[in-house]
Figure (spheres, rainbow, N blue to C red):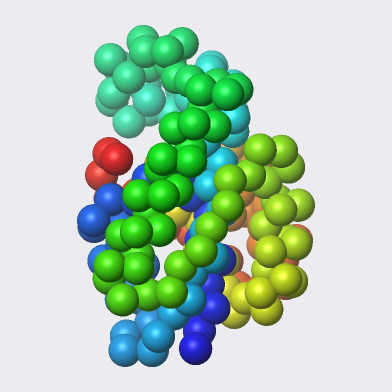
Length: 157
């Protein structure tokens, strides 16, 4: 069985589930999810710049409404639950946990713990971080010791 650590920031959509569960053809995959709610990942200005770069001006104006702290944790738990159920319904093994601090340290520890074959980082585009190679995938490539695949979410969750 192929073991994949899947790092996400929001609930997987049905298109995301189909995409990650078919990456390895017929080979069964066990997914280990790490979810850090979007409100904890970057400051509002960077998120607003990403929204503007994507042409989502209304989203940029609402960045101040993005939950943080305990509110983000509650939404994160729901998103993790939805994602795990969707992966299991698609026939994959799946377990997961929320990450509250230091997501790359948690990622490295989980890769070692489960003997992962790969890491998949599945997020919305984060242009500022990507430009400076400070996004999760770019930083993880130097930290985890397994291949890191960077994918963009297919649609809004």
